[in-house]
Every structure is written in C-alpha cells, then in structure tokens.
Length: 297
Image (cartoon, rainbow, N blue to C red; front, top):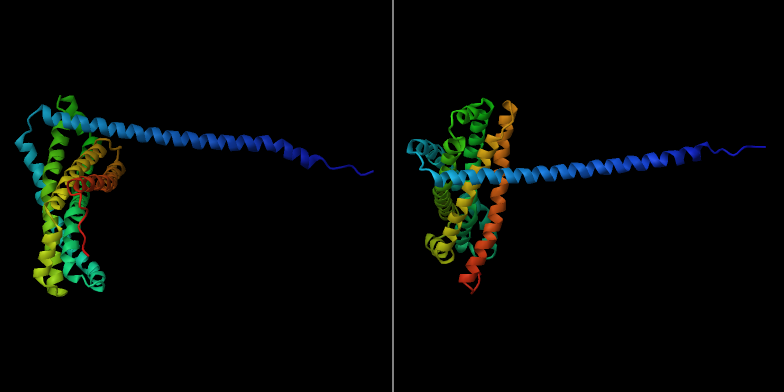
C-alpha cells in the first residue's frame, strides 16, 4: 500500500512563518530608515536656522570692521563681474537666436526686444547672477571654511575667545547680500546689450522698433522685481555655503564634498525661492494693476 508524501507540505507550512517574519523585519527596517532620514533632514533645517539667526544677531550687535569687509567685498563682487558680464552677454544672444524663428512665424519679429529684455530683467538676470555667485564664490567659501575646520583653525579662534561667525561668516554674508544686486544689474545690462546686438546686426531688426517695444512692455516693476529677488538669493548662497564649510567632515574628501554640496544646495534653493518669490510678486503686480498682464499680441 503506497504512502502519501507529506514532507513537502509540512516544509511549506514550516517556512511560511519565517517568510512572514522576514517580510515584517524588512518593512520595519525601511520604516526605521525613513524615520531616520526625516529626522536628519529636520535636524539639518534646524541647524541651518540656528546658524542663520546667529549670523543675523552678530550683524546687528556689533559694528563691522572695514578691514575685514573690504577683502570679502572685493573677492565676492569685483572678481565676479567679468564672468557674470560674459555669461549675461551670451545669454542675451542665445535668447535672440532661440526666439527669432517663433516670432518671425507669427509676424512679431519687431517685438523680439520685449520678450528678451522682459525675460532677462525678471528671471534670467537674477538667477544667472546667483548661479554664477554660487558656483564661483559659494563653493570657494565652503572649501575655505571647511579647510579651516579640518585644520582646527576655527577651534583655535574659539579657544582664544573670538567668535568665528562674527569674523568669518558675517563679512561673507554681507558681501553676498550687498553686492549681488550689482551683479544682477551687470547681468541684465550685458544680456540686453547682447540681445540687441545680435537682433539688430545679424537678424536685421530695426533698432527703433526693438527699443520702442522694450520700453512699452518692460517697466520699472519688472526691473525692481529681479533686484528684490537677488537679495534673497545672495543671503541663501552665503548662509548655505558657510554652514556647509563650518560642518565639514574631516579629510580632503570632506572639504570637496562640502564645496559640492554648497553649490548644489544653493542652486536648488535659488530655484525654489525664485518660484515662490515670482508667484508672490506677480500677485502684488496684479493687485496694483488689476487690468491684467501686458500682451504681445
């Protein structure tokens, strides 16, 4: 009489609780990792907030030394002008190249100056200047302060009773905050000049119509909107870059990672600020001008 094989069924029933336990353990690990990630992000935001408040407190609590401010202003503002001017010039030309075909198809090529200059003064000028500042100055500040942290120079300042935020962060913060509007104006000017030169000399657009349409559709609010946003961009770049440098991990790899994170975080924050500031300023514009936005058609 043949016996019925029961071993495989018993093995399956025996492994079922183990499989369920393994799935539960994996799910618990994923939840723990998610919670750890969320807590680290919240702690990081809190650390940056405290760092920013300390920086603002030292700005208003003590008079700033001229011999400390001027070198920072020179490094941040003067040395950044050539790269911002050159980039703005070619951005204006690129806008003319990319917009001409579409406007010509609509028969609006004479209004090319309006869209180029409006795009520059409202968005591209301040974002371009902030991006160049984050790439050239923000990364350098993070690397410099990170090197000082790794070589224990910041710890030495604290042991001597000097506050490193006052001597190292405040001059850089004020340099970015005060000089980024100048860089934005330079980017706007060179972009407008580049767009005009390419449109008039190479595309054959009459200069009278070019500037007349620009004057009609671009007003002082558009220009001031870009300048206003640049203050927030400059403050964000300085605070993020200095915070990354102050919290640099030991070693050459830590310094490089701090410089990279300073630029990446600053750039992302610039785009986020640009979105929300643009929405808010557009609402302000619509409130004072209820007739609605200007139209090219």
